[in-house]
Image (cartoon, rainbow, N blue to C red; front, side, top):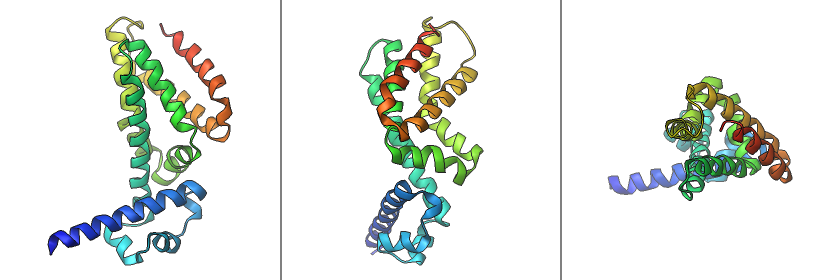
Length: 191
């Protein structure tokens, strides 16, 4: 009996996360009401509160999934290359490509900091794509591809530039090639 309950709980949670992601992506966190969320998921408010403390916690789970998917795309693109510089460039471009999806930018870059607060959002960003950026830079420094330097400030600067580019691209995805050309030129200046 406990197995059946756990299965139902998992299905309910998945339905809430999936419908919330669709609604948050389409209209943004602020414009989605709790009644609409539970109605779209086909559950009650009580079921939502059994799974999450409220809408903000549900949003954080959605954001975590979006951030993990972007990070996975970065890793997949980077791992297709042997050379550490090529890996770095491929991962950076993959981040921008993933961010041309307006739902990614809306959830991860617009609503994320507003709903979670800057500190909590920043920690999530650093634990996903930001972590991969730091790792890539550490490899580049260790192999002498870029001059020895503290990686943390460089990673924060590059992360900020890429997040800003991603926000811009979400509204204008046709600018990807132009944005990438500028970013690649900036990155090349590190070598």
